[in-house]
Amino acid sequence: MSPNTELRVVVTGATGNVGTSVVRAMADHPQVGSVLGLARRIPELSVPKTEWATVNLARLEDTHLLWQHFAGADAVIHLAWRFQPTHDPVVTWETNVLGSLEVFNAVASAGVPALIHASSVGAYSPGPKEGRGVDESWPTHGWPDAAYCREKAYLERVLDTYERDHPEVRVVRMRPCFLFKEGAASEQRRIFAGRFLPGPLLRPELLPYVPDLKGLRFQALHTDDAADAYRRAVLRDVRGAFNLAAGPVVDARSLGELLDARVVPVPRQAVRAVLAAAWGLHVAPASPHLFDAVLRLPLLDPSRAHDELGWKPSHTSLEAIAEFLRGVREGSGEPTGPLVGHKAH
Image 1 (cartoon, rainbow, N blue to C red):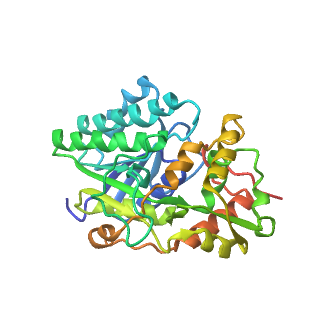
Image 2 (image 1 turned 135 degrees about the vertical axis):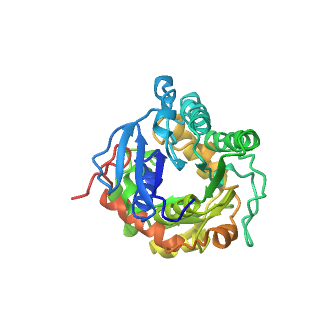
Image 3 (image 1 turned 60 degrees about the vertical axis):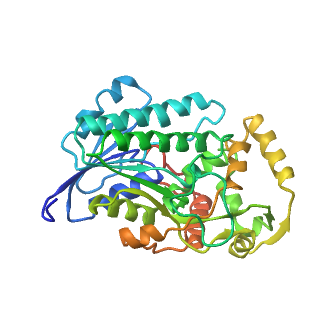
């Protein structure tokens, strides 16, 4: 590919947390000539070099036309994902798995040379919570009881076969840790905490305690830093999986310092029982099965992304979380369907 070639990039799920950051990152690069953002609803968001089109990956009449959107593209970045409803995994499977299969097939049919797929730390099998973290060779069988992990792991197996059958397509699998930014705070609150938790309640003075749970060690990354890695994967001739994570590792103690709150040991079973009851009553949208998975996810070693993509996050994990919490308290959002906010007054 000539350095002077202006690239055309298509992004699915372009109006969500990662999508809005990726669209901006791609449009901001001089080598990118145009970006096509695909989403279920056309947003009011205006980004240079960017056009929008509606696609619902759960509708066959939409997925059968994907190749038309992909025609002439130099890369497809596949981010589209549905987190809800957790009580009906058949619905999420239709979009996340069956819809992704249609995207992969359309990439090959349209002759797109590069597919950048959003996998996740959730695709990994349970692993260590201490030390350097696992590299990209760690098994990707997920946590079988959580729909999110099952779906991410299933697509890893699909791509194993896809790469064998379509060697002409350069496939990259991004495996980021938890991604946060202020503009996505309202969406993430709705997805994981529900509409009944007012954002202003998450002020530090109203959160005097942080539960110290066995297994509560995880990594966080600013969404804009993840978007930078996606952009580098489009522009560089790389293949395979890349872990994405920033330091330091987040635990109860660091959360307590961030929130100026006391750390209190709490039995994991007690927290799970409360969450399971709330989920069963349809009060909390986050399932206890995802809670189980989070406490088992391994830490990630992002050395390959540093070495082969030249990638380095510009925010620490705690800075990303602090920005997210500020966004939750203030009702921050963006002018897209998924990210619409409710500013606090």
